[in-house]
Image (cartoon, rainbow, N blue to C red):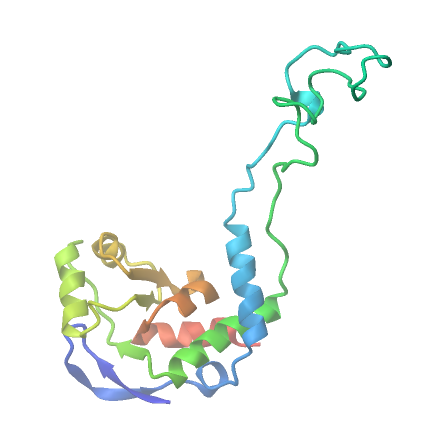
Length: 209
């Protein structure tokens, strides 16, 4: 896939770049994407939910009435799950929802996400740039110049650029990630993918088998 390199002002840089087929031209694997996104979302769950079982409820353990002769059902203490205010049977406990996913499956999922964006022509390559100072106005101006101000965008940098990250922090529907932090979920969520030219080689190197 051959794309023209753009400046962050929206103008063409006068050259083009070829996106490697081994990452951007593969046949996407939907199941790998599903598994990786499921893993990412599961890992983000806090898992701090908890309810009190019978042993954790405060109250007397005295049997509230005699076993026989009352004409009603047998009953133990007031902490029984059958009574209002009693314990809960098989209630939720704190747990870790994350699960292991093979490295090859994660790589395949990310390559599949990149391939989907390439097939839909939703990738733009930007000439390497930076801001002198962190200003939201600078980042908004870049999106407006590229006509992406109304779209959900993901900008991929080769390394963390503090000024760009801080400039984008207050902008809705946009996210800035370096190559090391790119994941399948963010790739699939973005409507437009902006890749800094110098980030293409690290992406390919990271996703190479």
